[in-house]
Amino acid sequence: AQQIRKGLPKKWPIAGVEHVILVASGKGGVGKSTTAVNLALGIAANEPSKSIGLLDADIYGPSIPRMMNLVGQQPQITQQKLMKPLINFGISCMSMGFLVDEKSPIVWRGLMVMSAIEKLIRQVTWGPLDYLIVDMPPGTGDTQLSISQLIPVSGALIVTTPQDIALLDARKGTEMFRKVDIPVLGIVQNMSVFECPNCHHKTHIFGDDGARNIAKEMNLEVLVNIPLHMSIRETSDMGKPITVSQPQSSQAMAYRDLAECV
Ligand code: ADP
Image (cartoon, rainbow, N blue to C red):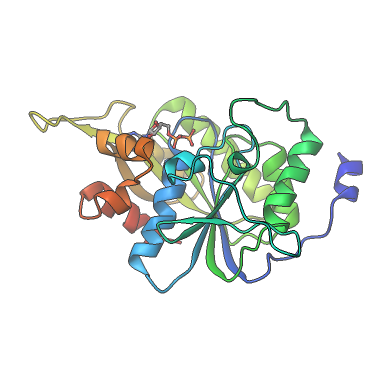
């Protein structure tokens, strides 16, 4: 690991990018990408004058192209051989999903992941941006290490469900960011409550407010509770995120509240 670290370039900011915010989770499937997308759009809705980018750092399972309705598109290349981000809903996006065929998965090894991440950071005309939101892969692996070594990061959000196992992984994630000196801004408790569309009864499918306990233990805040709601999944799958397709819904408002926290 020492060897690898020595071989990596020094840390310096991405030209023209003011703040880098990581959206992380201890395990997959807890709603990290959904949160990253709606956070980016939530900031744009709250502050229309700000310019926002979205970097899909999930090399193994990129989901930004689908969620941002950019599937099948490829970036233009500038004369300096840099890639231009693809833009939808006013957000500048870049993802490995634009560069490789999703149907022929690559077997990534550690060093390849690091160089892919470096390309997505350095060979893209990101600036000028007020915020670059980074959708991280789940867990604590090579990507987390590369990003913390390559660029200064303003802060990380940890997405978790209220379930015990997801919380345990969230704790590991928090500890890792603290080790590499990235400030953890707080916890996003996703899928916190399900309201029956017929009788409006509320059910805590993944347990009741588990994030509050871990937050207290780790000296963190639960920044927002996002409900488990069919419309969030449907709009994500359609490539029309809830913050743009149903901006007045309480679900969209929850993401805009989160956007106030970064
Ligand atoms: P991750 O990035 O953590 O792997 P995703 O954001 O891809 O997770 O979400 C996993 C699945 O759960 C997706 O189908 C997504 O639409 C859905 N989902 C995420 N958050 C919610 C929510 N609050 N309510 C309903 N469905 C959700």
